Length: 219
Image 1 (cartoon, helix red, strand yellow):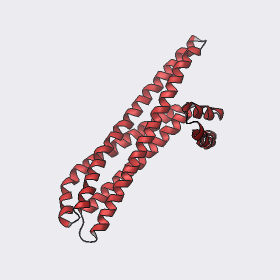
Image 2 (cartoon, rainbow, N blue to C red):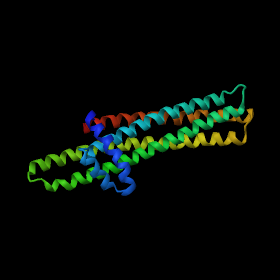
Image 3 (cartoon, rainbow, N blue to C red):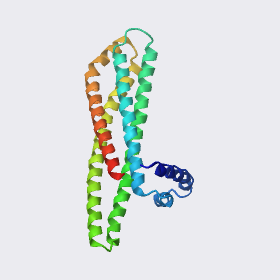
């Protein structure tokens, strides 16, 4: 997106903070942005970028959590409380990043739905049949690319759940069984957690690539 558009978006979003408190209406938000020359297409592009960045951050955090779990399994002396605290903090950061990913993807869906509804409704406003046809074709092409991207994002989103559940289980287990024998027992889960985390990273990378490709079609 062009720098000028980013500046316009930042100014408009600052105003939206006040407007949202008064109205809380999506239509009002769109109209405010459009008053600054920011169309739904620009909003969608920004939201896709935010979702992509959130997925990238989550991917790194889940990889970090896996390393922390490996360090826990390899424990060979030291403070058991510190070991538990480190693993718990890593799990909590992963939960936070996963929630951010879900929120950002929801925003992408909402704006995309509004954009395509508006685009479809405005096809009837064309006087030129040729321009109407070309616009419909472009809309369908954009929708197809969007569907491919959002499907990749949703697949990546789904891969977070088994990893989060596994980490939660380990944290709870240690919380109530904080001893060397319990830590040794966690080693039995390492292969499964590694496999799930690798699948998550691969899915995130695919979704990030699809997001980058989709953003380019909007520029």
